[in-house]
Amino acid sequence: MNALIDWLLAGDPAIIYQTHRDLLRSDDEILLGLQGQIHKSGWGAEFLSKRDTQTGMWGKGAYSPKWISTTYTLLDLKNLGIAPQVPEYIESSVLILDRLWAFPVKEKDRYLDLCICGMLLNLCCYGKIEHLKIVEIIDFVLEKQFADGGWNCRWEVDHDHSSLHTTINVLEGLTEYIENGYSYRNQEIREAMAGAHEFILMHQLYRSDRTGKVIDHRMTMLSYPSRWKFDALRGLDYFQSIEMPYDSRMVDAIALLKKKRRKDGFWPVQQKYAGRVHFDMEQTGKPSRWNTLRALRVLKRYGGELDD
Image 1: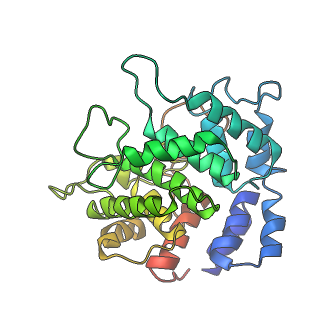
Image 2: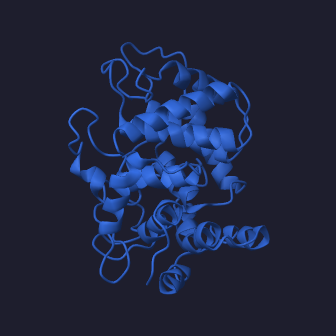
């Protein structure tokens, strides 16, 4: 285990910060200092350098082109663990909230994308932004939850079954809402989240609840960044982040994660989603500090300590 930690601590400031936060449980003073480095050097500084200082946008777009748009770049920065008070982060988050949320919808036959709703909550609530549109998004998300406990971006078309992809994006947004002290409809949100957790678990994180077969082979592959896609590691990492108690329906996904470990002790990047990027943080097929860190914190909570 010490060799893995040393390797992580030789990585980007974001990896160092999250290793101290999630694996070493370092004290708050150390964590604040490490987090403060994320936007100043390494991947965080490189992402910020791509921002158009005149428009506050990345990639000349709010949501596309993927994956260099403002939304996806902000998600990259948020997932690095950037200090939420960094001005560029706050300014651009407010910008996309204004650009992407318009309610009620006026264009004929157009419906609001629930993945985007989740992303907006994720980004803006992390920055503790106060805005009427956040309340409107909460109302909309709660209204559109399906009876099976999850959500589906195609809510006007697929009426009877949720999507793991949509559900994880909404859950991540609602988690930031709850954890950052927002109070509007708080209890209803907690109940909605519990239903969504059950939806993911009844699928054992990546299997059909009807046949038991793998829903999509890509859900079993290790990727990072996850973009809007769900996979088994993303689901497990979400559960550990909210300190979800162990559930026996996690066992298959945890066993899968353990099998993904390379002989050298690391976890790799197995796939990347097609699209434009500002730069590659890691290379497909190579040892991945992101996936090793994420795997270790999942196994720390659910799978026991690992030896080197």
